[in-house]
Image (cartoon, rainbow, N blue to C red; front, side, top):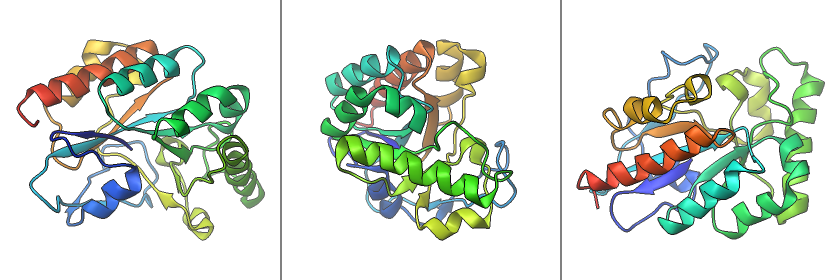
Length: 220
């Protein structure tokens, strides 16, 4: 999950964010996810106020580098749930994500919904994507996000942490920067996991603006 900290302490990765919290259940009832979706339980372990901002479906040849520039300028780390086919075509971007200290998660090869996939397809989607990422970074992902949050018990056998979300502004649908901002900033609370997509310039602009606006609310 992309991590935005409102003090100077940043989570280094989404696993640290998940481990830092326990207690308050993220409500995914309004999300387009399967009924069996696992919800993370989170509660701040200290007085810091933090949210996690995640980017799905990339990398984008044009938009992801702009996002990385913006995150670097703000000294903010993020988690990118990448597609294997796009990673394969953009090895330099995947390496840059990793080299700049962001976390990379598995989002399948081509955004296949795993609850309707065969067991063989699930294996291909996960293993092939992990292989691609590892070949470029030397790092094998330990977290994954199933497309649309759709999965069943078969996915659990792979031992990867399944990371969903608590705020979805539907940025991929509206493609409107201000709408995404308006759906995040007023409701964001400590421990939230925000979902955006670095495939759209409007989403990148929204993500960077959200960082600036939340920090400006006094959580610095």
